[in-house]
Length: 184
Image (cartoon, rainbow, N blue to C red; front, top):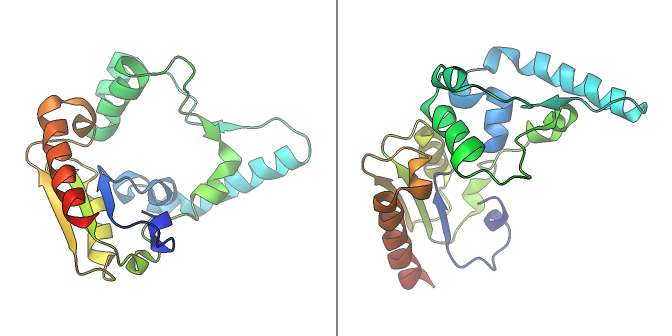
């Protein structure tokens, strides 16, 4: 979505379970960490200074959770995500960790910043029960540069379920097929 704002080689733009990673790194999921933005930027700045001085790189999200810990996570997307990415669909070489210093770049990114530059047809698909739905709804409302846009909600689906449950995947693929047949 970010690339399509300026690269007009894209003839149509579609998202499925849109996740604005910059917003989440900055504000926390569902804007749950707004009060700690400056403190986290300070930590990231200190980590970058440590690395620049030849010190050890510090990592964020370098955790392995038990089933009990996963069950206690506050957001369904994270509970299902730890199961999906950490167990059932994990690549053996994958890791969710990232350098703490990279937060300086990650927190300044926002997929919806200048989204009004998208003038191509836009289809955004999200689960009606996804706790990440707010990101698609926010992006959709800001996408004022195109008059050909649709926010399509897959009834009953959560964010992670749109990746692999056949009834939701089939619904998304059918919608995408129809959209691209019309716009390409």
